Image (cartoon, rainbow over all chains, first blue to last red):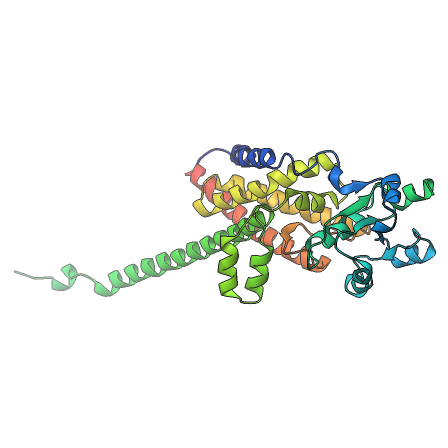
Length: 143
Length: 200
């Protein structure tokens, strides 16, 4: 085709919009456009506290921060030392228990990544994995 | 009658030499074209793979291929499902450059753009436009990766879906620069040939 380079690029960019729009419509209920974490996968400090002993708290922050302070009873589990820390988590986990993962603040990614790994890569894949809204900072405010 | 056989005789050596020169020149040209086409296909293959890993859930298939479990790989092919765009959106979001809604939009859009551009290379359809888009996207992605590294972000590479999640920063950089070099070489060749055609 003999159109200009920019013209060709625009046509290609426009063509790619069509299947992308179709995919976006297909996944409209499965991804949130407002937050990185789907609302159904988040939990507030109040809700998580109400779960009491039925919930396991997982601290996804680096170990030095965990050592400084953490939610009482929380287990350290982060991506850097996943293989070393996972056994101690599995020792207390039981099917049906809720898992509350938190990291430093609202903007951190560690809790999301750890929650994702627990859901997808463990055998069997874990259900009832939630990310604490606001993370450790929210916990401190409502302690 | 004077015959001048030598004057009328064909000059087989000269013709042969001319033919052979042309033949060698043509075959060298064919080989060069063939090699450029191979480069087209290699680059297209990379981007088709990159696009597909974000659209389809290929984790099991890739793992089986890595372990040379061909039978399992064929079984995986029969059970392919769509990948969650949330994972690629998270990978984009991890760069901490764009707001979440833009990351989601790009997670839907970029894989298809990669595939369409790659098909453009394969079928030489909108060829220069495809090369320009792919080159620009690699440049942007490389700059974003470098910026993330400078800012101390330990991010998951989303370039080949989760197949590349454990790649180190130098591995990212070397791969990107190699792909960019190939794209720029193809783009330079395409634009120079195009300008020559226009001049003629």
